[in-house]
Amino acid sequence: MIFESTAQERFGKELQVALLGNDAFEPWRNTGIDRLQSTCSYLIETRGFGGWKG
Image (cartoon, rainbow, N blue to C red; front, side, top):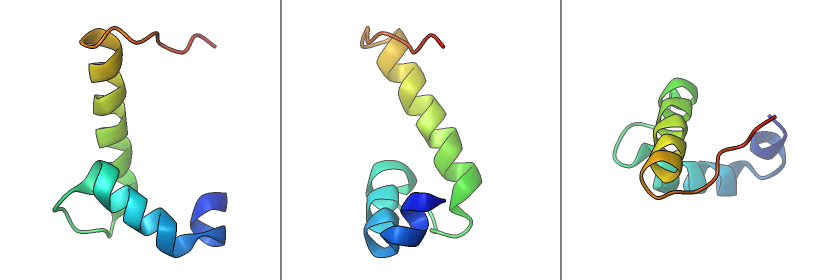
């Protein structure tokens, strides 16, 4: 990923704080994507943000 290769330390910190919480960083892809999907669903369905239509 572009973000991971150009700003690896910052990317790791942001991912840990925003999506992984206390879970281990490796492997982050499945857990991070699952949590991102859950967060998006919450924001769209519960908080009333508009979903992306594309």
